[in-house]
Image (cartoon, rainbow, N blue to C red; front, side, top):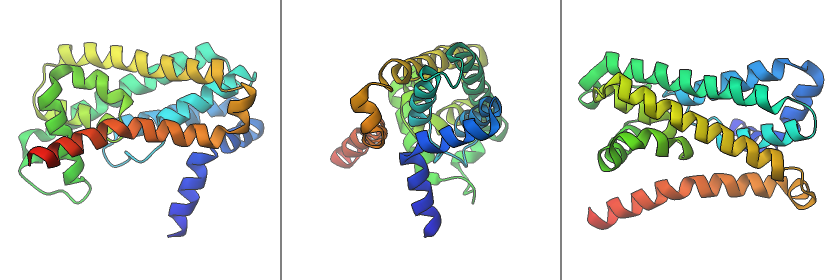
Length: 211
């Protein structure tokens, strides 16, 4: 269980770990952030990767002069759009089979929860899901499996990626280096994680209530 402790430490002290990577590897941090955002949005097997907190901390580091915030926006928006596109493609390829078979690499409960979320909110789920961990990873996959028109999906994909990346990056850029936030950044990151999980908790409560 040591890896769980290490992962929690990584997420809660993301600023320190990214700061060390930035100092040691410089501009390679752009590639690292691109890979993390792409994998979190593009692969249904990696919904556990940090998303919201990563963007906030990246904005904080950019405000401190470590990175260019405009390059960050361009690179991470591209990663988010490309990730969702790949995920949609995988879902479209597998089609309705994903709802009928059990796959060892696919979390069935996450898939069903996302499908219910998708049925409730329709196409705008692609935008809403950007701000909801786990749902964010599974929404494009479900959209592809449900044969959502690609042109319609792409429009929601681009809008959602722009809103998600820019809002969270700028939140970190403008507020991440305030004295109180810097002193309590681990608590702020934890708060972001908790707030982002609220929609999942609400949906689960509604399901239990009407189930």
